[in-house]
Structures are given as structure tokens and as C-alpha cells.
Length: 407
Ligand SMILES: Cc1cc2nc3c(=O)[nH]c(=O)nc-3n(C[C@H](O)[C@H](O)[C@H](O)COP(=O)(O)OP(=O)(O)OC[C@H]3O[C@@H](n4cnc5c(N)ncnc54)[C@H](O)[C@@H]3O)c2cc1C
Image (cartoon, rainbow, N blue to C red; front, top):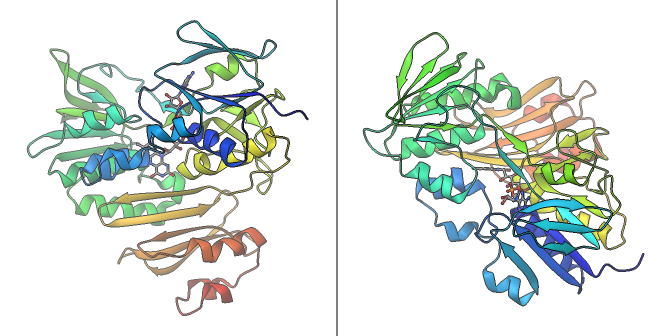
């Protein structure tokens, strides 16, 4: 395969920034253009609901590379410009100013946007979503003693915002339709730990109920009405009900799209000259044997190097399992693996003391996933057992005196 002369990357999030980095790291010396709709340098989003939102970390720490890095690596950075269409036959990307850019290879890293609230009043002032630096800054301005914040959705982002808001003495209510927040992601036993920690920190956690309407006065949010008719006072609302992949560009290129952009194990789309990475990539996963689309930081961090290897003529598969982390109050956790085939949960440590390692096992006693809460250096030790599909003894798994290497 002849080497491409111009690689265009669309999307200035972590996956886009890591793609242009991988191109230079892997020795590509042709032209590279990064088209980024946001006007800021590419940055990482996890601090937006954690340290930055809580006021304990400056935003600068989230920026992937300083401006001079792009100059030094001859990356043509087009910030504040959205790509509006892709013509795969002409190998052209149209940009919001009307110009067209020719590409030899194209990488799409257009990420996700928050799912919007499906009920009345969601367009009132004081209703926020959290995706960008500006969103986080605006939500932070709503915090403070005597202020009432209602968070719709008890997922990771909603709960992290709740923790940050409580840290600033804000009155917080979280509305979650399930019996327990996070239960669908980590199961009821551990979800209970999270519910309890939030209640212990004074969050008014309303479960098994939904928000029906945001009630506004003079265009500004004043309360949230629940499905049973009860209203909860709100000076501000954060809607955290999930995200949806941004696939309009992929659709304009006639790529195969179904819950994200369909890619093979090597992150190739249905067009031989277009790759997709990060939140939008719905990958045919080589270890799981099924498609998976992962909206996590580590995927955006690690997929680009594999896509770039393949784009430059190599043949690699992206075989990492999902990894993510969350920080809420003094509860830090990491998760690695996949729980879809698990039938049993084994806990090492003590759920009540909030220092434990949770292992998900399948019917054949293979560990499929692990989650460490306020215990560290676990994932690197357990990952080889997950990847090798070792059969383990659940009693040993639960025993804190047994080293991970002896499981
Ligand atoms: C508040 C918050 C906290 C999070 N915390 C965690 C965490 O603790 N742990 C974890 O594992 N994950 C976390 N995540 C998820 C993680 O941040 C995402 O998985 C990651 O950002 C995905 O990176 P990405 O580059 O694929 O997409 P994005 O970060 O969404 O970036 C995509 C970029 O592409 C741009 N774009 C879209 N369309 C176009 C276009 N047509 N032209 C040009 N540019 C375009 C967008 O404006 C955006 O800047 C969090 C996410 C959020 C929002």
C-alpha cells in the first residue's frame, strides 16, 4: 500500500488528539489536519465532573497537548470548525466555512453529545447538560450554600456532579428511575454502596421515580415535577441521562452506522479509507466475539494507535476490554472487563467499609471483570487472569490473604 500524503482527523476530543499524536509517533511525515468543532485545544473530559467541577484542579491539567506541540509536530489545527460532510468518492471533507479538504485517509473521532431531556421545560434557563469545559464552568456557577440543584439521572456523571455540588454545600436531589443508581452497570450490591454514600453525604436520592416536567418561572427553572405530581425546588437542573454518538458525518459518507459507526477489529469502517475511534466506534471486538461501543476515556486514549497502525498499512486488532474510573467523595474506583456473561459476584473485602474488590465470574469460574474501590494496584494484577480466561477458585478469589498471582 502506498503511504498516504494527507490524513484528516475530524473531532478534537481525546481520541482525535491521540490520533494525530499516534501518526507522528509512528513516523508518518505527511500532512495531518485536525478539524475540531470546539474552539479550545483538545482536552480530556473526566475532570469536568470531578476535580475541575469541584474547584480542586485547574482546567489546564485536562488539556491533552499545549498549542506549541501541534506546531512542533506540524499538525494543521482547525479549531472552532465543524466538518459538515464527507464525500468518500472524491475523498473530500467539507468544513463549516464551505472549504473542502482532500484526504487520502480519514479518521472520524466525533464523540458523543448528551441525550436531551424528553419532557417539557427542558429549554428553560438554568437547565444544564455536561459535556464541555463551558458546561462544567456553568454548572459550577450554580453551586453554593442555600442553592438547590436537581440532577436528573443517577448515572456516573449525575452522581459525580452530585458529589462535587455537595462539596460546595449545595442542596442536591438526584432523580433516578431505577431502584438503585448504577444498578444496570455494576449490579445491585455495589450500586447500594453508591446509594448509601450519597445519602450519607446529604443527597436527597429519589429512586424508582422519573422527572416529568421542569417548571419554569419567567423562563428560568424553579422546580422539577416528578411523575407522581410531587415538585422539588430547583435553582438549577443538570440532566445526565446518557449520551448519543455523533454519527451525522459518518452517515453523510454512507458508512455503515448502527449505534455508532460500525468498525472491524482493526477499527476500519465500511469504507477502506476511513477509520473511526473513541465514543463513536462500535467495534467488532476480537475477545468478546460481539460488537461493543465504549463511552470511556481509556478507549479514546488507546484505540487511536491501533487505527493509525492499520491506516499506515499494518494489521492490528484493538483487543483491550473496557476500563473506566470514577471519583465521588472519598470513593475512588476503577473497573476493567465485561460483566455481560457474568453470573456471580465475589467480593474481597468489605462493602460496608467501602474498601473492597469486586470480581464478576461466569458459569465456568472465569473472572470476566474486576472493580476495585478504595483499593489500588489491582487491575494490572488481575487483567492477565481475565485475558487468559483462567479458571479460578471463588473461595480464593474472596480471600484477601491469597495473592492475585496465586488465584
Ligand atoms: C463530564 C464527563 C466525565 C467523564 N468521566 C469519565 C470518567 O471518569 N472515566 C471514563 O472512563 N470516561 C469518562 N467520560 C467519558 C470520556 O470522556 C469519553 O469517553 C471521551 O471523551 C470520548 O472521547 P472522544 O474523543 O471519542 O469524544 P469526545 O470527547 O466527545 O470528543 C469529540 C469531539 O469531536 C467534536 N466534533 C463532533 N462532530 C464534529 C464535526 N463534525 N466536526 C468537527 N468536530 C466535531 C466534538 O465537538 C468534540 O469536541 C466522561 C465524559 C464526560 C462528558
